[in-house]
Amino acid sequence: MHACAGSLIPGTTVHKIRRIVPFGARESREEPTVPRRAWIGLLCFWPGLPQIWTGQEVFGLLLAGLFAGAVNLAVASRWIWVEAFAPGWADFFAASAILTWSASFAYTAWWAWLCHPERHRREIEALYREAMEAYLQGRWNESRRRLERILALDDTDADALMQLGAIHVRTHQPELARRAYRQCLEQDGGGKWRWEVERALAALEARGG
Image 1 (cartoon, rainbow, N blue to C red):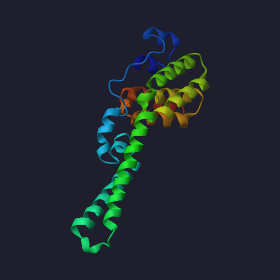
Image 2: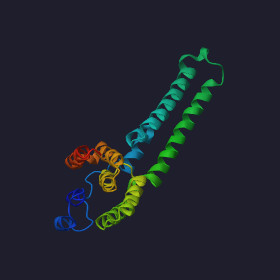
Image 3: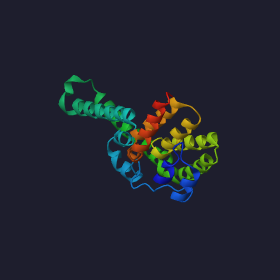
């Protein structure tokens, strides 16, 4: 897919694209950008870890900090500084820790089952092929809508970000193009696009866009 999608940089002909690879193909990912659901499940023992590992850093840190605070206070009030806390506080802190863990586990299970990009992989691949076809036919807005749908399902899809940047160049929106290209490089799978992105950004700067 790299050769095919990379050829979609403005200025490359449809003939060259079709000569390089079959229409609409793109390489399978060797590693998923977002960790697999099974690994996420293993991290559920401590609230916040699954969220941090899947890119929800702020939310994950809040969950982890809340759980750690509740556990520490429960231990301290029950066994260490017993006299410093009024009766009933130890039970309150323990219940808070249990509720935090339960809520975090439920949220993580819901997210991994319904929202994880693996669940939408077939839809994403189909949308990408449709976006490629629309691009080759010059239907920029239709291609853009499909790419944006992909990013709504998986905002770490470097391939979709790369092609979205190319469409913004075609539709004379240089600021949006720059943003998409830079977001592409920020993703784990964006390294393969570095040469194309740097060339596209240099072209935008040269034309003063």
